[in-house]
Every structure is written in C-alpha cells, then in structure tokens.
Length: 262
Image (cartoon, rainbow, N blue to C red; front, side):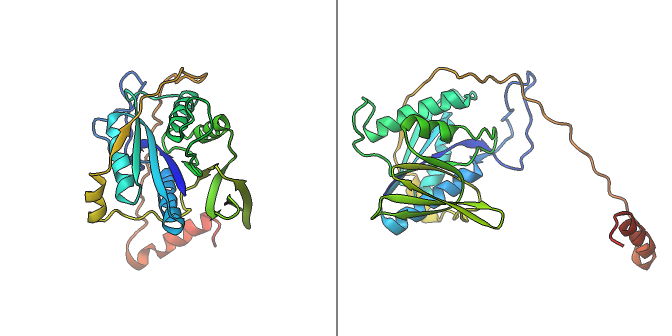
C-alpha cells in the first residue's frame, strides 16, 4: 500500500485566538499550533492500514517552514516520508491550495509531465475539513483534478487488495452508508474514526532522522478572498450560589421547576 495523507498546521483547538490590529491575520505571538484533528486521525488511519497490509505512508502539508513540526510529529507515530510545500505563511484560498497540492501529488507520482502514473498513491487521505477555516473543499477539488473518486465524512476504512478497492463507511442516524471505491481513491476522514496514538520516545528520536522534502509549488489565487477576520464577543456567564447545605434545597427545587424538570 502506498498512502498519502494531506495535513494542515492549525492553531491548537481550545486556544484563545486573537487577530492582528488590521483584522487580516491571526496573531500567533502566543499561540500553539498542531495538526488539524481530523487529519491527525487520517495519519493514524494510514499507519494502521500499512501495519496491516504493508507499504509506506507519506505526509504532505502546505504551509510555512514551521509546518515541518507537524510532519515530524507524523513521522514520530509511524509515517515514513514528509513533504513540505513552503509558503510565506499567508492564508491561501481553497482553489489555490488544491491546485498546488495537485501539482505536487502528480510530481510525487511521476505524472507531472502528463504521462501515466509511475507510482500512484493507492489511497489519499484528507481530513473532512480543517479546524481553522472549515472549508470542506480542498480534498474534493484535488480528487476532481486527479480524476479519482472521493467520499467525505468517513468513519471507517477497509482495503481489499485482491479486488483493488477501498470500502469507506460514513456514519448516519441508526447505521452507516457504505461506499466501495476502485483504487486509486481519495477519502476525507472524520475525527473519531480512530484514537490517534501518542509518539513514543523511540518514535520521537526516529522522526528527527526522517528526511523532509521541500517541493516548491504555486498557483493563482482562486475566486474566494478574505475580507477580514472577526473575533466574536465573548459570552460571560455568571455563577449564582443558591445557598449552602440543606437550606439550599428549596432554591434548587425552584430552579428545577423553572426548567420544567419537576
């Protein structure tokens, strides 16, 4: 199995996000970064698949030089290769991102000149959406440009090597939708498809030796443009102490009655 996982460097979920004074960028001065959670599960799924079927996992990201940290982390949990498409750190729209990633993937597969793929990825894994912009677009655009089938919202993946297919399961109310795609294929996985492992000390040390390849790529901006970032007003909640000890029982009953519980 030859699997590619596309990941994105995003602000750590739960962190306090501040924007610059001009409202055009996130103030990263005191902000931690990580791999987008859906894509972290994508890396784990890829590693589990090659542990079962054999093969290698390549992790690809487009972003600033600091995004090498996310590639090294992926290597510490089992990925074999890292590829960085360096940018100046500014936000790229989905069309521009997808075009650049498609160019790089074609180059990695040996089809950059328009010929037959020398070594196509059997499976390309995206996160269902990124944790910061949540556009739901890049994976679909890349799959369309490569001419490969894709399904999003996936919570289960099984490979049938003999048939050359991947079975992808999407969770719905009361069960699953099941899709069978001919490989090479693309899937967008959701957080919860698995429980990502923590890197071991051995994995951390090994990740420092993994070669991270830098591949230049660019594309024209698409039709979407950011106007400004707006940080919503924080909701302040107040805690009201109803009382202490047995004396608070009456007040608790009043609140439960107001809520319609009693």
